[in-house]
Image (cartoon, rainbow, N blue to C red; front, side):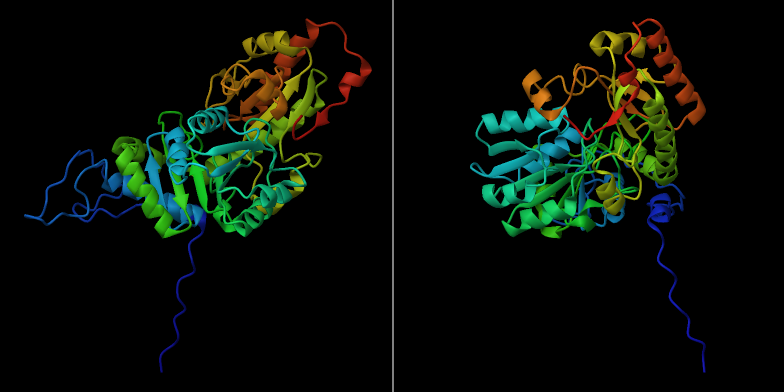
Length: 410
């Protein structure tokens, strides 16, 4: 009689991220797999192609990253692209002329710009709508789109879309649901498990995490759709480079501990901003008064490292405030270990006209913070110091200005 041996317990997602492609080198036993920089690969013989023949079509290093991202997102297949915007463009090649796209009205400015430009060339029809509205599912039922583009949390106002509710409504009319998961990464949210069909990432951001690589990815729940995307990525020539894939995979291995620190620091920053009388509004889903807080608790495992807020005093105050910061660099992008500050109206969302920004609730006094992993006390002190100096140079505020508002938009 032999004792029954239980199978090993499944590895956690965090452990799988650390172990991605580790000790897979069959030739020399390298713990970290080597970079395959070759543009072309030898055939085994006449009419005997190996797994890889040309790096635009396939590359071992890029495949390791794609496999890791598919596993972390719970998908069947992933395609790694050259940029986040090429990932967006790749998804849009699934559409036919006449198809309707319903997109979040406050999505990233680059996504909005591409959607409008392609719709203007009649590649598809476009409607920008508030997918967080109570009647969003009824709107989907009435408009019957082919594709619904979700961004949650949204950029830059951090609105939270109920992915389960939107996916249920979209699938009822045969629509594809795409979720941009850039702001949270699979460490904090897995949209495919909530009903999305495709997940899009700018891997430039949290997945890489060090502001030294530009890239993107699309993860598909359906392997057949994954094959379609891979065909288009090869045909368009928008697949990611091997060295970029190598660096991004290195970043993925530290994703979970980095995200934990981002979230902890963002909480400290949001609370400090809420206390200051130079701040008119704070946007962070971790605040209980945020309208999307309950949905975020239900579909996320953390509230993210992005915090947006509006200053009292308008654009003139914005300029003086950012010039006074030491620990936040004025720059576009996000998700790196270093803290950044951006002014959406003149930076990330400058491609949206003023009317579109107004409809989305993106005011000229809005600032967006990508909260890094520095010591939280330093970040808070830096922000409070800049705000204090702003107040010292401004006329006294009315007592009512001390009451901040936490809102999801508009």
